[in-house]
Length: 181
Image (cartoon, rainbow, N blue to C red; front, side, top):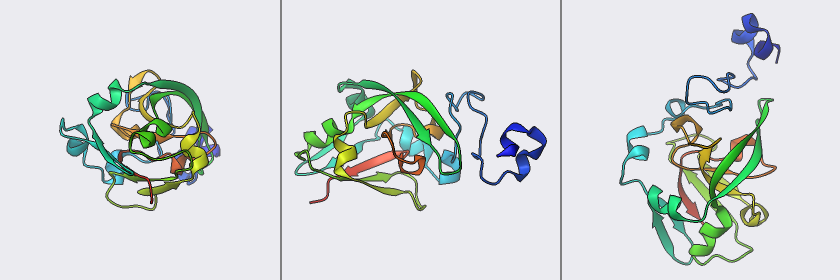
């Protein structure tokens, strides 16, 4: 990790965040960016389109626009992200409780979920979340970070943030949430 603090060593630091400069360049919003939208192959035009919808599937299906998500009750929580690459940082996240979203589609308290990202490929495009995290009142589908709308690199339009889960499981660019039957 010396490359994070000793600037000349940055190019040789393989395990640091790919973008270790929190709070600069506008898109970082006070947190490092581990994987950018461009690196993940995310279609920015699709995510920023007024036609974008989050699909939540359970006993029923719900398709929510960004405005519809913003109209739901919002919660703000201070939660950390702990990256497997060795960094950890706390931030203020605002969004909809995941438990409230799955309840809307008829899922009960014991429901686990599958979260699908809009990224086209990669090992963390689909994430399974056990019921204990789903019903935790701190687990959010975050729409804002540190008081600002999520930047594209932080997962715009929506990302998962849950307590005590590694950063790789804090899925960005959420497109679909499924409650397995």
